Length: 250
Image 1: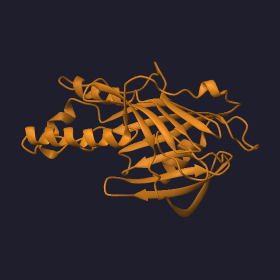
Image 2 (image 1 turned 135 degrees about the vertical axis):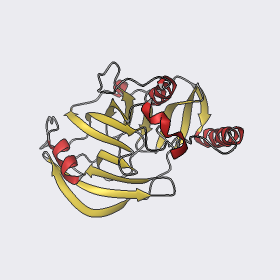
Image 3 (image 1 turned 30 degrees about the vertical axis):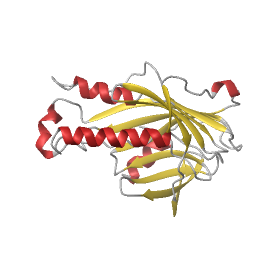
Image 4 (image 1 turned 90 degrees about the vertical axis):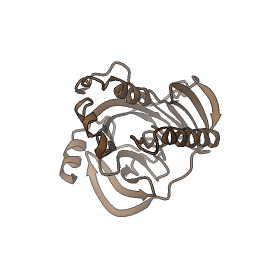
């Protein structure tokens, strides 16, 4: 894994790397393992959906704010779903359309998210993760990177971030470190976010746009509603069936 990660990141396309970078645009490749959370009793589903799905996203950032959104009409190598798998692909595809705006100074965010066929505009403060620095470091191209980890009852994460871009942001809602996050691994490659292109350039405030679509709701209310609906669905299925963990930013 370490060798693969190093080689993958080594071939970044970099722009100006010797000056301190405070604004720019980064392309991330997002890869999800769709088979990971399918329970054994539903293993037949694996033949109807691809094992992995890969999409591209763009982070535009300045020292004050950032926006993360999907890149439209990008080509991927995702195989077509098998018979009966289309609804699952549509479910994950809708999650890929999320847009996230983050005010870096205040920690407030504005995010669009699909849930049960409805679009919500979620407004609230990000809960900071208590990252642990491992002391590990490596060069990624011309960028010096450090490793940090986080673990709770639902997820185990490790990231590589670079203090050479001293902006406390990253893809989705992964932030809170003294440098921009270039790589994220969630639960042993259940989901990875990998920076593939970095362009340093001045950013106009208008480029960092806030999402506007969806029914506005606070983060607290959205989480309450989501938990309630998930419990209802489990009761309807008699406590059985597939359970999808919808983390913030997904």
